[in-house]
Image (tube, rainbow over the protein chains, first blue to last red):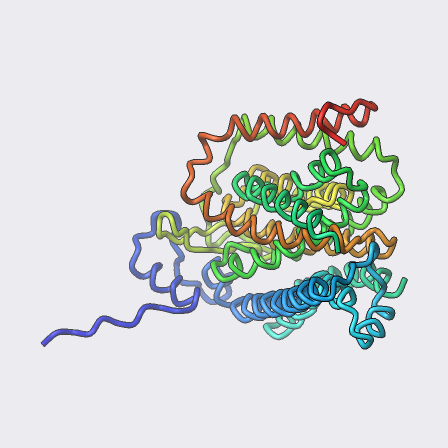
Length: 158
Length: 282
């Protein structure tokens, strides 16, 4: 009677666990953590899994949405032979231009979406750190968000 | 929309991205000087376009690096504070500094990159001690796909790394490049972060720094969609191709060619800063 091999691991955490179990510790070992001791690197990686996942999802969707706006904008501009503007407009001016059906506005919205994606990522990363109880890195992420938010709000509202 | 011009800029951006990927420097290092020297694109517009292209590339690259855990999120967010702040300062310097100064700084950076590439050094992480005190909890691990081993590391000399990241941010903002050319060696040689983790963390960070740069240029009306769109599309597809080529082409054998290209572009910008334009350049 043949045995069915276990299914291959899917997530990076499962892969990490599977390889760690199957591979001799050539680089470093991860001993069990005694009560009161700090976590080792492997445990840190597992603990942060939700934060990594939410960051990856945000960046993926930000890129997809930006790329979709850009593709449609370029195609419409080419079909209509509509020239792109020589200077990207601020956000308050992009929305009325979009409502007028201007392809250049869609291209500018794509640029704004791409620039805004890491800002949204900083926000969800901060929320992710808060959720796992890591206040230090939640606050650092909020500080990064504040720095980026300051520069981007200047850009959007100029 | 001037399609012929856009296609030219897109193809050149793709070429810049292929070179940048193969060298691990990012496309902006080549894109900005080529736009300025050979296409006569205004320096500020070239830097703004490059910054947006770097954000795009960072977003795409980071989704892969986050999955493979090459990105150290805690380290990235810690270093990001000074990098992003530095990028805003650098972008403001770029907007108000004389063109010659920016050309000179960019030229010097390219010459530095050429020299450091010729003398490429890499540092291995120190042995990992699980019980060592870690107030900042920056230790992390990832699977090295080349050796199928779990690599655990703990960044060293963190305050120095934070300071260097601030300087990298200033350069990133001033020149519209990602800053990986400074960040990766700094993380590897100073902080003893393994090269793959340094590259993954830097790839994530440069997108944030370039957001700060792009936003400052956007606020000053220096984002020209006619330049940005070909740059973004070209850099995106060029980086994809560059990553695949890097796996197949032994880049070590091409180091001399890359060094010559970097020296030519760097020397051209330094000469441009001195008021000399080489034949064939605009």
